View 1 (cartoon, rainbow, N blue to C red):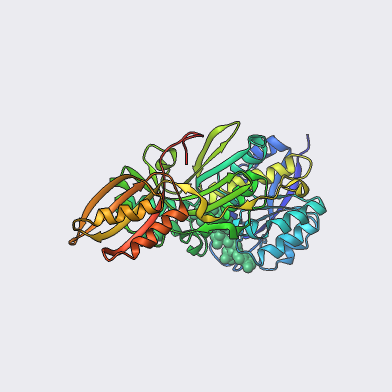
View 2 (view 1 turned 135 degrees about the vertical axis):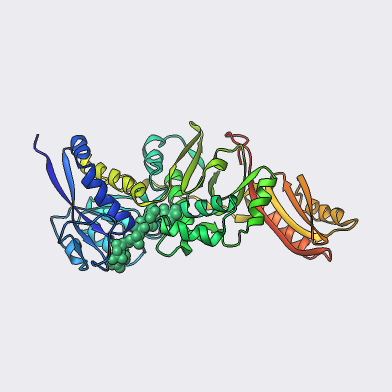
Length: 433
Ligand code: NAP
Ligand code: HSE
């Protein structure tokens, strides 16, 4: 059988783009055997063609002129691996409007402009695929949209940012935050501006996408309550260890009735929980649903080649299958409401610094009891003449815990620290929170 030559355009030829080019060159025979198509990078848009590349393209492939990709009718398939919302969004919109299919690794673009771009794709008959935008090599979008389509997934819990997991793992081994971040940047895990990683914005975009796909309802990015790891210090990591837990940046989406809660933030994970052992740039996503009970997918969550494998899988799906891509059937989506953030129930870890004298514990217990927050564990640690209390509560709504902390901050015995992090300790569809 004669193989079909498929010229592919790239928007971007950096960490991911160069790895896409490398894999297509090295795995071309396998792709051809599987699909009957030979994919080759014909044009790639960059800012600076003189830059050194991890995989050198053929002469004449790199261009700084967007029209060389956007206006070339021979490029029916384009991968957007440049990042940023603009100009990437306009480029992707123009390609889709002209009927050309696009694969993107850009989670900010999908989370912020997905509704508009999928509508454009649906009306022109083009496909927009985005597996690489969430958890790099882990095929979680495909699993949710195809394999798990009738399982009524109601909870997604995951470590979805490789850079922050790499930093927290390194801090757990005694390394500094700054060193670990610099290494994550050098290894190509971090975003061009790592602020998105460390503030939780990257994970927020990913959990918005996962919730949208899992719950079949558009979950906008501004519904995600996001906190990053900038305030995490070695002592937080050590405190987690002392309680037989690990500190992780967790993304969580919960569907309760017709209401959705989506959040990202540091959390304490029991050492026996599957997410506690996810280390370095690895990601993991735990999906819970009626028919499946629980499925955990784990794998590389960042890195050039790891992400390129997902980009290429989407390219291959487009050339190797017929019909339009998924997520384009807008009319059948359901409307869900946002759950008020204070309603989400969880066990909590409280870190309280107070005077070390008789009666203080009773005052704290009173404030917690006033909000119906019940203590499960308490460890007291001396701290420069004061007391550092590590409290683990039974399950309580976030709003009540915050109200108790506000009262504690008003006590004369309070000495400057009163914070709460969610705790993930159990697993299983009924017991897991
Ligand atoms: P990168 O190394 O910074 O590469 C970006 C590429 O896009 C570069 O080739 C750059 O050109 C080009 N570019 C950026 N803005 C441009 C503009 N305005 N005009 C023309 N060219 C432009 O980034 P990356 O790590 O490959 O990430 C790319 C995308 O993949 C992002 O959306 C990111 O979130 C996503 N992603 C990355 C990873 C990862 O582990 N790195 C994993 C999953 C998803 P120059 O080379 O000339 O500067
Ligand atoms: N910067 C991202 C991360 C890349 O560290 O997870 C993968 O999306």
